[in-house]
Every structure is written in C-alpha cells, then in structure tokens.
Image (cartoon, rainbow, N blue to C red; front, side):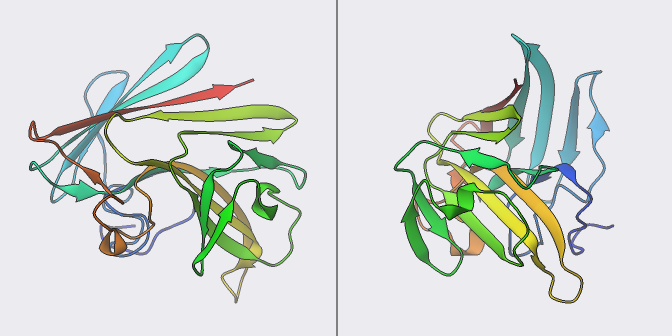
Length: 212
C-alpha cells in the first residue's frame, strides 16, 4: 500500500478524498499514515490539503468531527467508505422519493431494488442517493448514518457488490458511504457536484453513527 496505488479492500471504513473513483483511486488519504493529535483526534497530510478528524460520543452515538484545510475555492469529494458485513436479508432505508443515480446513467427514485443488500446474485452496482443526508441499514439491528455539512452538497453512495466484481475472482462487498458531493469522480463533477473550501480555507462537517 502506497500513495497513488490501487485501492485495497480490507473492510472497515476508509476516508475517500478528494475523489472516490478516478485518480488517485479512492483518493489520497486512505493510503497515508495519520498523525495522532490527541487520544481522540488525528490528521493526515495530502498534497493539496490536510484532513483532521476527532471522535466523540453523544447520547450513545459516535460523532466524528472533520476539518479540511486547503486553498480557498478548492473542490473535493469525500466519502466515509464504510464496508459492512451484512446478511442476505439486510436492506438500506432512505427517504422515499430520493433521486438515485445508478451506474450507467439511469436515474431512479428511491426505493429501488437496490435497497436489498443481498442475497448474492452476481451483480456489482454503484449508485448515489442525491441530497440524502441520512440512511439506515436494517439487518436485525439498525445502523444509521447522519451527515451534517452546511452549505455543501450531501449525498449517500452505495456500492452493492454481490459477487459480481472483479470478474476473475468476484467477492461480496457492501458499501454504504455518507459523502460530500453528487458524483463518484471529481473529474466529472459539475459546478454544484463537489464540496468547495470557503474563503476561510477551512471546511467542517460532522458524521453521526448510531447503532440501535
């Protein structure tokens, strides 16, 4: 694993920034070492920005506070690339009527058949739930993601790989990814499809994760 290398799917949650797909694959941060700042905070230095995150708790929820420092006007995508080990009966719950952009250009309205996160059927599909700040994975218990980023585009990405990718050795991989932006690849982002660093040079956002 080295900066600029191909993404290694090891499960858990990675920070994808400043792009999700494209160059570099899954962004710059995931392949770099983080520097501890305290028992609850750390930062990672990338060529064009510094990303800081700090963990806290509130009413039984995990709260992650993010801060990205970069030149004013810097555009980026970010995703909490959460790969989840869920059963064939798991479903993804999101607000009804949410616009959903599916790989290949299809535009759908949530809920769609993609809400079922199994069983394995040999497909691999990515989708983005546009302007969707909260989703819940239901699999016996519930795991809810809530993203707050005033003034920035907020979506949720879904990677539903039911042993459909890669073609030579397909495996199962389910990603539910709160994100800033509306596209997977920063190079394809329109004027309103990416987050933008304000004049202060600092962009802040918060992710809250609740298990119940």
